[in-house]
Image (cartoon, rainbow, N blue to C red; front, side, top):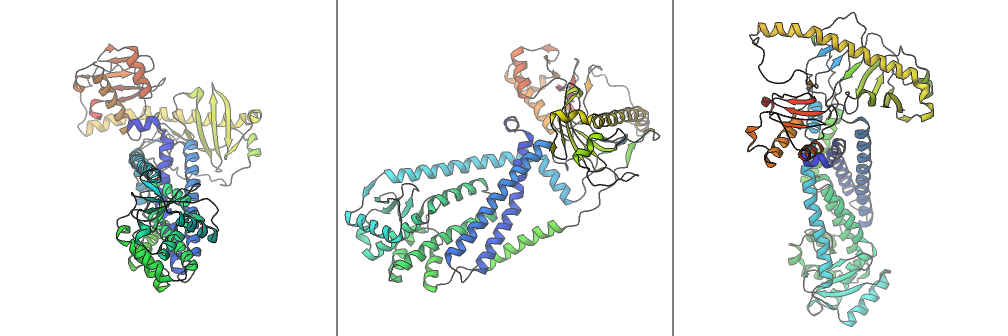
Length: 597
């Protein structure tokens, strides 16, 4: 799992994961549209039905591409879904808030997807790679049957194929080959199409039946079905888990064959001749898996024969109607569900001096996550309409800011990057380099570099709000310690100080929302120490500390090469180290005790 997070950023993983999740209901809607097409066009031509089903498929692909781009840009800009605030200790107007519960099914679902997005992404990626190998194997099989154990067709049938192609208007030169590897006629290739027929077919079927078979394959070439089928197979490879898309794709393949049947019947004087040719290959078609090649086979051959006889288009079965209706109703119920009111976050663990002016929300985050909370309504309300960007340059320092969020972390203040929201709904994305504003985006609009100095008042106001919030946090911490000790004494938890060896000079970062990522990193470091021969087994690791400058294990400094390897593998940066156990070193970063594993 850690290997995946090293190759892909967390934002990219979440973007792909949410795209895959949304594809389920979008695929269901596309399938619903496809079902409506089938029901409303029962008396229309197969060509119209095929085109409408194709529009549903293309619309799904375009929507998913746009959704992926949107999710990607959103994750890269913000860094995390705003609903993943559960379990985080946050500061609101100087109050230390308790861990906030997740209310409602929707919030729980969002939190679950965000928390396990690396797992979901890994499962999808492994399955996608397997499907891609199958897709590639299919392409190699096509190339193999085109060149292995084939022989030319009799000259008279090559001339017949040329004549039939001219009658249909097929422009590319088409080759006709007999193959010992195929059991049913099929067409492969787009730029250089080849029709492959089973060896000996010209001795087993009548000339009229062979004509209809060649007409069917030429119809595929005329319609460029092979290329469309390749693109369709690629879409199925990506969304292999999507039942709605797979069902819609099956409808499209079946209508494709029906369109070719109609072309054959329009050119052939006797319907019975074509039916006899189809029935001749029915024993082989039931075991054939259509994927990349095009031909007469497939599990839907019986329905095609029934359609040719009755001249009625396929209708949806009762089971298909029930499943589609149930899925659409479930989506409608979920979308129309009334969201419960957000619980007020004013219930606090401890209250500091309330005489101090209220500050904004400052979110302390670990190096790998950013939390987000819903603020309570302020006593003094302001219009929620955003102000034009040009008018914000003169904003004074008395402006109220509702939230300040740091991208990455808030421990490198000179080079900080943060997203700020004011009480009018304006969103500011600021980036500093050595305390100098180098980039500013207001409500999504990039501010030119030469115009940045006009926003000095805005920056000063944000900086003042940040410092006020930090001061409120310090006061809250100062007032919290005695009350916490008193609570421990009442509950019987008061005891002697711990005798651990950890140096008090180590500054521990605020705990992240979910320590599973850091647990994985600690276990990975311990495993690497065992592999490197530093210790014989994991139980011998009493403590270790790794920062930007050194790696210490049980008090012993390790080699520079091992330090560099682990530092790069586990994202160790200045002031963001990784420590385990009762450490005896100076540093700053994530600290996990033995009990945390």
